[in-house]
Image 1 (spheres, helix red, strand yellow):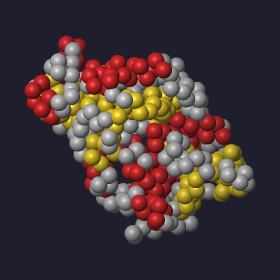
Image 2 (spheres, rainbow, N blue to C red; image 1 turned 30 degrees about the vertical axis):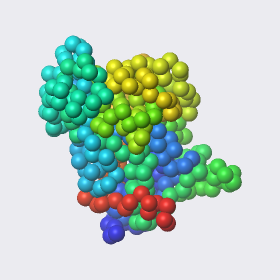
Image 3 (cartoon, rainbow, N blue to C red; image 1 turned 120 degrees about the horizontal axis):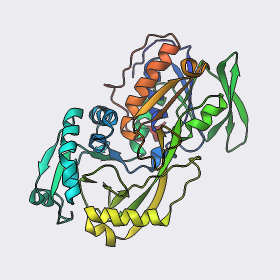
Image 4 (cartoon, rainbow, N blue to C red; image 1 turned 60 degrees about the horizontal axis):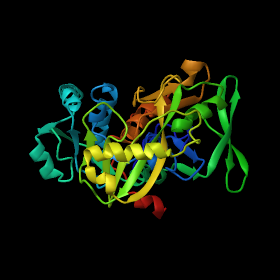
Length: 394
């Protein structure tokens, strides 16, 4: 692969080895920067490796979160192009089962049209021909271009390509301190969590890409990031109960999506807020709610053999007074702490979702090169990624 030659002397340290960090490492190496990425655990072991594996069409956000809807459909199309073979392009159905769902239909169709999301309205018989296990009492279904993916393999394509282009990727390396001088972040103290050995990594700029942990890392630099970790419980049952992604035709709620993953069906998700994204549990009543609500879409969920339940923290941006987290946008934000907080050499990228990882990285990388005074355009929209197997081949 051919990289840009903007400035091989500029060194960026990325903190966080989830999908966003991997996509950012890929973007910055293509622009010619030297990149070191550190992750305290295994790559993708945080929120990235725990979501249900949905490539969003954006329809889920089309009524109440239009910015997120537009981001999703744009990145949906780009990812299919640059990561061929990573997705099961199975589409999705938004299913109406109550009169209240039908009342939601006009706003849903209008929101999708305004966001550029194609839709096809199906009657009950048409929907049941596509998905025979749907609730037989459904009233309508709307087809949208959702897709499914492996939550870890798709991001590994970004890691593999970044490393092939010169990025240094270090897992099981935790940042314990950010060093500042004259109002500028200049280095990071990192500890190998296996050996306990600490070293100092100097950088021209440090990017905080730690998702729900971004508030904790930002405090090391003496700044505040308005992040609200919002966990959600997901449930996997045995059996592929649907071949398309099945969504409830209403505003975002608990247990209103079923995602087929190989021989399993993943039902999600609940939502609450916490202070510490490491303080996660799987409340039994949330699991029961996934079964109850999921069975309204596909009745077979109720009797399907249980496989697993887990939780993951979403990195939502907004007030810490948020109740459940559902009222907060799923969009993302890049913060240049020099302009926002008077702390130079430090940038945070947070929010968003797996579908928008490349777009998030592009916006953040644009900020990075601007701060460093470089002229290096983004090239990730068209650069086809290496297969995920290349990550293990190196």
